[in-house]
Length: 151
Image (cartoon, rainbow, N blue to C red; front, side):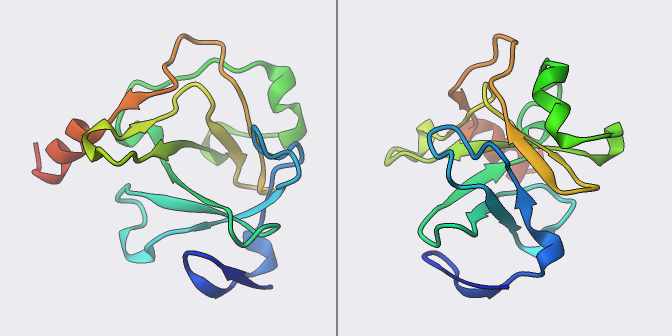
């Protein structure tokens, strides 16, 4: 599948790389087909990825594995919320959170309250509001700088 995107130009995505979010994402229920765009050389080393809509070429959001900035992140989600993902062993569970980068970059944050949970076996995903008291704006600028400096 070829897609013209606002940020990445024309990209070629294999059908088996399309993530299906049947319920869409919060605020955008009609956007249901996505792919992850990232630097393959940095795969497994953390870093920012882009959740690119295949339904709307203008829509892409930066995402991050929450464990990169909060190693003890263990959200509580209802079984009902995960039902649409099918059988999902822990090793097939992939969690991402959205990144917000305001003009004042020092106020960069991730949303730990509404993660994306993806079953990597069938590429079905869902965005859920977790039951825990995680913040919508978890500040990460200092955390990322310390990681970059090797601390």
